[in-house]
Length: 366
Image (cartoon, rainbow, N blue to C red; front, top):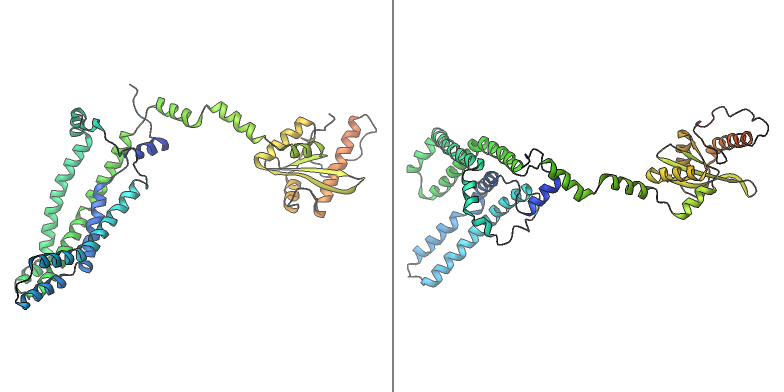
């Protein structure tokens, strides 16, 4: 069996999340719930209402109806406990959803008899996660002992003051001291929580590691054969409408950027002597225009400055070339006429433009 040395891919992590295998730092969730409960308890748990109910029953002197008495206490309990429980539940659900990246483990909601396999149970019992949990439990015992010692040193005056406090203040003082103890414990346990989360993250990715064959197989299944995909992508990029292909074939020349912009120029002096933008494409479609023009014998002039200027000043296809670019376009046209005349064996061409276009141009009659 091949050794699993490769990190899990994104698809592997997504599939594992659907099965319920996500990174879970349960102690962080417990930390958030306990901290939320400790901070929200003074505001949501009103002990004065409980004391007032006791005082009302004691002052009435009458024997209350057992059913009504139980119902009143149940209603009071729900009014006090329901907001507190809902807040703690929301505080616990939020970090759990964040850890699972808001992925619902749909495939894990099914009856699985393999979960009762004693062999798997023994493997889990003697796994690295079990060793980690045992070490963590010992650390929590040490943290609790340190917390009690620090709490006694900091709050011993308040603790002994409870014996001399008024009855009306006992509830409030107990709540305050309990909150202090809980928050102090969480603060002392924070290093253990961080180490536990780091080890849990390492074990989670270790369990999902893949061998090289799995990575290659997954890539083939999700992306397909690399050569076929590349060829298909190239063909797709070269797909141009018949209208654009016809415009390319009828253009006098194509001025390119050379790979990001392709501008087709068409001139018919019998109709309008002003150059006309017949093609205006960018990126992959520009490359397709250049390839189609070269296949059809249409001259491709690679002039970065002119291509960018026409693209910027002529925002639409089927529009005349801006007057700022007419001079550059006419220079290219004159140069092309001279090249055509030379290729036909006519008189030697005249002086070339001062700044001729790139020498990579190809004549359609060449």
